[in-house]
Amino acid sequence: MIDSRPFRVAIVGAGPAGMYAARHLLEPPAGTYLDGRLVNLATCPVEVDVLERLPTPWGLIRGGVAPDHPEKKAITRVFDEVVRRPGFRFFGNVEVGRDVLPQELSAWYDAVIYAVGAAGDTHMGIEGEDLPGCYSAREFVAWYNGHPDHSDLDIDLSVERAVVIGNGNVAMDVARILTTPIDVLERTDIADYALAALRASRVREVIVLGRRGHLHGAFNNPELEELGELPGVDIVVEGEDLPGDGEVVLDDADAATLRKVDTLRRYAHRPIVGHPRRIVLRFLTSPVELLGHDRVEGLLASRNHLEHDPATGRLRARPTGEEAVIDAGLVLRAIGYFGTPIAGLPFDDHKGVIPSADGRVLDHGTPVPGTYVTGWVKRGPNGIIGTNKKCARDTVRSFWADAHAGRLPRADTVDAPTVREIVKQRQPALVEYDGWKAIDHHERQSGQVLGRPRIKLTNTTDLVAQARCHQ
Image (cartoon, rainbow, N blue to C red; front, side, top):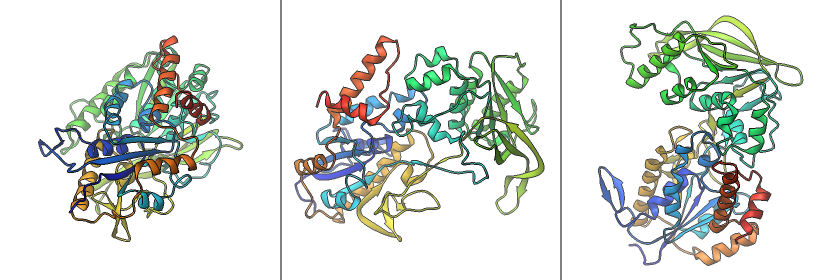
């Protein structure tokens, strides 16, 4: 039996995962699209507070999507509509674990949904990885997008060659940004300091290393094709395993793989014009060691070949014993994001996620009442922005199932005005949604003067000061 007062839910994280969860909780009268039809998941009123560590919402849409992909940021219009629904509040510049504790949230709210993403990195585990000049792609992407945590990175682009380890979509983004003509970047919302650094960049070649072969590239075809559209950039495809025209690729190759192979073939057949910059796609190559004294000066790389693994039935990359040194002054590892633990919550150190089943947080296999996860901290760092929609919906369905079954700790929760008062006491620099809109307006107005979408404020002090102008 559900009592008459609204359910109070806290969502930690204002990126796509958290905002989709808020959207499903505060669903419109028509309901939520499920199994081919609209159904009403929400069966009684809900109040949702979204707590975000940064003064700004939208997570990786603001801090991770490449600046030359503005179409991917259009989803924020959907989230703006969610914000206007009754019962929604935004608490920015509030860090769980610093300003409020997980156990406090569990006491204040009927349920808490953690949508904190993956704020760490997968490491290569090779010697020299900690040398200056080696960064994760996550750090580099956050740097050029103006993320406050990384706006002070000293990225040295005075080198002539950069090496990107990994060949997923993030690696494609990094290679593209490093070689995109500056007049194109000047029309984007890239951080001003990154724009200045790229304007003075001496990088002429970007080598993208893939451990496996052409058939196994983790990139998608649209991202691969974008490289070929860059003006003034040669695209070089290396590797001996690229199937020739008319050659059978794989009996079970899907359409997406075939499209990627076709694109790689076209690149392999294109003449090298001698453009000022070039991107080299090198397959069947693994890093062995980063070389240098005070900073990265090169990379020792191993040539691989593919072997059939009888245990898994799959092809695996194995070293051939052939090694070579690649001179490079910048190395960016794009081999995966990784979750980070939150004190007071269970965490799987191997997978980098909060353990869960159907979105319910598990502590040694037992569900923690009223505690849920969605997004990368639930399923690992995979999928696109839209993947979070279904992921959040499934978690919200578990929440409602628990609500109807009486499994939520409903006693002694705190009302909305009291929670705001406590949060404001803990974090006097609280940024609420009106404050974010002031930041947004200022950035857009600043950009309009220069014909850009916005000029981002890139440190917390400036963001909070601008928010306070209208609070």
